[in-house]
Length: 58
Image (tube, rainbow, N blue to C red; front, top):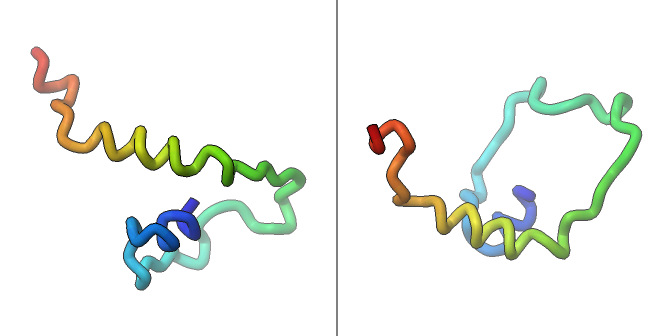
């Protein structure tokens, strides 16, 4: 996902993760290619920006 966001300019180039971030590759048994869905996912996340928090509804 971050590679896609970087390719579209939506993520900073200097974005770094700590060395212990995520699951070690030796423990990963499956990979799912979600590339066909990335554009739609990003648009959905962008639509959420600026929406009021449910906490504000009270």
